[in-house]
Amino acid sequence: MNPVSFVERVSEEILNQLLDDLETDGVLIRLEKQAILRGNPITIDKARSTIDAVRMKGQRACEMMIKRLQLRDPTLSNQLGVRAS
Image 1 (cartoon, rainbow, N blue to C red):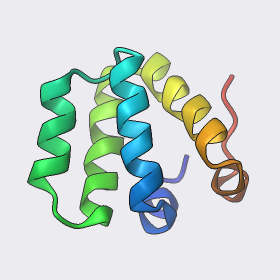
Image 2: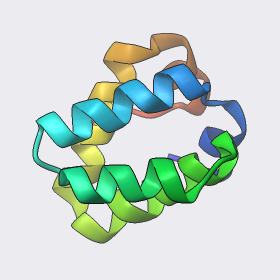
Image 3: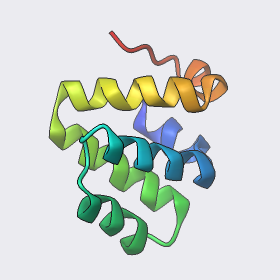
Image 4: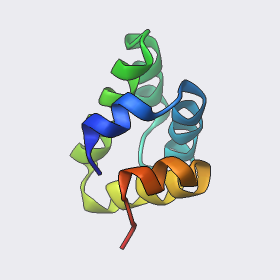
């Protein structure tokens, strides 16, 4: 996933849903999610922080985020050209 394109295109609504999904999936713990939401008032910064946090969790976490993005926003997923393996 091209992080710059994701950061520029993702809506706040989709990003919030992704963060909820990532918490549900165990990729992020509640404190990490809250830190992203509270520490970044601008959607672009929230998106950037989300990408950074998920990348630090490894390949499996990245694939889970991609799968969730495909479900939440298939159009954006296609525009970004992302596919989960």
